[in-house]
Image (cartoon, rainbow, N blue to C red):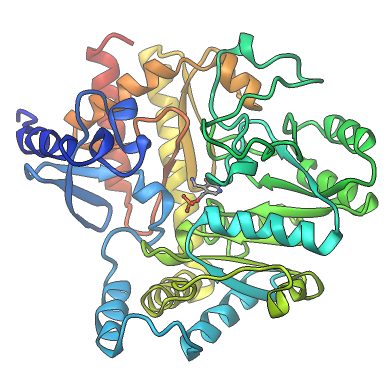
Length: 442
Ligand code: PMP
């Protein structure tokens, strides 16, 4: 059947007359989607439907915000019933306490919890908290890691030509945006990831000045890059021995990799943790949490963190329904996320081999990305910039739309499994990939 997307095209033309690039984020515009993006009308389980009525098996899942899939009945029920009692009070509510208690139980080291709305806000607050608590201003941020669009983080987060990023001992700092506060990056130290020696060197060069190291547990914004064995524990030791706080950004990995995220899976023991995406089951809910003694610095606004929408009633209702579902029956949900993610990854590897495609499917459990490369693994930002053929991936993802499969067309973003995905969705996707690779120019 022909893949007709005429209504999306008409909507995009209309959108261009009122919004820059026709939308609210450059990732949803022509940079990733080519001529025009698909306009999505509804989602159900593992699938989304565009305005022309085409169905897609969705592996993007709202950038990972939907661990239960689209319109899960418990989330729908919780939100639709709950909303009749009011959407927001910006006052103390019992549901806020309850969700904080659930997080405290699920996540090791979450002694105290504070709610925010987005991953950006949570990471921004975490760094301010670390600075306020330690009285130091610098922090280490890794190449290729993304922690949101706060000025102080916006350096070396985008893929770049390998020739422009310099030597790994002295990375060339490339700001990700114009318009930053002129001094925003003065206290941001950029270091290659998966390399403990590089962190040691940075600590030596800035002795006594570093408040925190912030890291993703699994790199999720350069495809998917797992930590080298022992790396996160090594970071924990190095930071502890040097009186530096460790901030673990679990925006992507939280409530997905395990009940307690990377913190539990890799046994890290971070000081401050940040969460967003999967926490709100599609509503804007984020949180940061950590050691009570550190979180205490927020008291009386000593380290300021405000927000009209923090712990919104609707968001909390969605979060409670989703977290309870994820915790049901001794973690069967997490086992499902892993099983489906690994089945898709193994299947893709098979298809690449059979079709002679120079690509790998790299990931951890529920997260994976297709990387066109002749390497057997991509281990850091430098590998990603130097050895991954990004336009080729984008071409594949755009072709897959025609075959009813929705993966993010951004080569840097990844696919995730959800509770709604089944073996049939995996088989359907593999067939689509096989067909595109067999008939297209790859
Ligand atoms: N941290 C990480 C690791 C992320 O991947 C993202 C978003 N992709 C963020 C923070 C920012 O989250 P948000 O888009 O909710 O602001």
